[in-house]
Length: 180
Image (tube, rainbow, N blue to C red; front, side):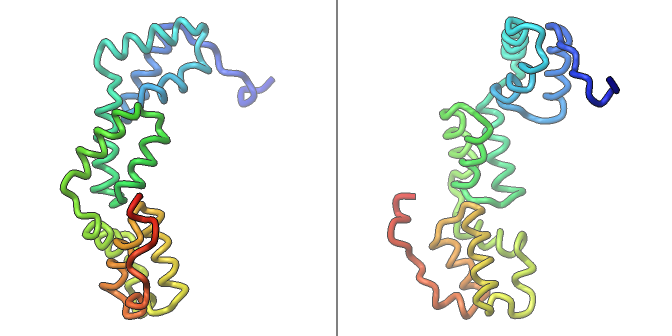
């Protein structure tokens, strides 16, 4: 059997701890993410539990800290709306209370209308070249990108109206969005 098809060796406690620390040294992980990465490589389930306990005792696993950092990164670097950031955090299997705390911390006092406009100008700058947003298909594409980035219909339309006469014809308010 050649090297590429070999099954990775099972790891004991110390090697699992080493692996976890290497992972955490590269980026933040949620408690559930580290556990999921260790479990397939563990020699025994008790070893995974031991490693997770050691990491928790040392303060290396803090879902609230991870949620806060990731939410702030979503807002400041990725420029996504609160809804998208919240969905992304939930996908990371963070505790619900950590998600709520991280989102509240990162988005407190943020005007999503301004954030949507910034997203359009910085992340969708190609749509602002020439008269692209005056073409219905391009306007629809830009609108879709804003919505997938987690912005409400009204905030997306307001941002597009700043750069497109055609967007003036868009209805600013959607029926059930008040509940979003």
